[in-house]
Amino acid sequence: MNPLTRNQPEPERDEIPPGTLYLLILKTLAIRGKLHGYEIAEGIESFSEEILQVEEGSLYPALQRMLIKGWVTAEWGVTSGNRRARYYTLTADGRKRLELEISRFERVIGAITRVIQTA
Amino acid sequence: MSFFTEWARRLHMARHRDQLEHDLEEEIRLHLELRRQQKIDHGMAPTAASRAAHLKFGNINRIKEKSHMTWGSEWLEDFVHDIAYGTRALLKSRALTAVALLSLALGIGANTAIFSLLDAVLLRSLPVKDPSQLVLLGTGEDSGIGDNFVDTELFSYPFFRQLRQKNAVFSDVAAIFSMSSDIHGMVLGDSGQTGGEDEIIHAQLASGNYFQVLGVQAEMGRTLIDTDDAS
Image (cartoon, rainbow over all chains, first blue to last red; front, top):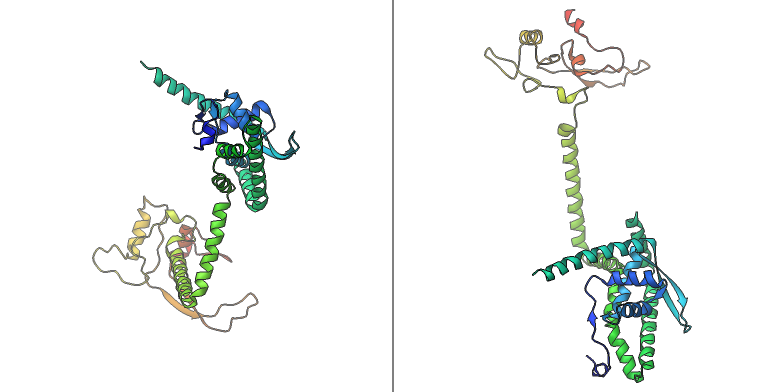
């Protein structure tokens, strides 16, 4: 850990649970539409009210994989700050995948919750 | 079909590596830049902001590597390298290569020869109407004589006649003589001319219903029929 960052008054954050990165990216794109990588990272953190923390770099290999799978498409555009950026959009396949990931996640979370609440 | 489109994209990516690499680097650069700017806007010193951005981003080299693996170029590159290495190694020791190639060629050739023989002798079914229904009584050796005792390899003609008369099992029974009689002769061509040379003709004495039982037709004229036995 860099000592400089420790001084920052940042809220306590949790790493995202393994296997949920695709779900979070897909959902963020579904809400916001067309986003570049940085905006996706910001989106995930702000939607989770700053609790979830993404290792931001890991977004990029995930996005590459999603491109191959055909869940998203990418095109180069220009940011509001006039910088060149690659914007990602959800495809129809991506939307289907999102539904699948959500139902899978809810099943797992539901099961875990039941285990925890067993007296 | 999505399997094929996925592989099409993979191949496309493998072929445009430089472009992908360049794009990825630009994306990462932009990301770090934007994060740094955000930290500065929150009142961080520029060097600290730059560090914080890198920290939040993670190991850049590892991320690039992971992306490369996604592009599917890893195995492709490995494969090409392996082929190149193998070729160089083979060229370096030509004698060994020659011996290896020769033994492989001979081995494959011998196997093919043996297989074609087995295929013809054992595997391919007889060119008769219903090979699976055909039963051979005895060994089918083309020579030999029976004895006075009960013999299950060779049968006498009267035995055949009896078997055929009292047959309740087979659709029909035919017989061939247990000696082959090869003769020499010339075959007349269509125009009535001979090939010029004597050739061996395999002749076989058979019962009149022989061709009928096998379900084989004559190419020209007719085959023997049952009534021929009477003449």
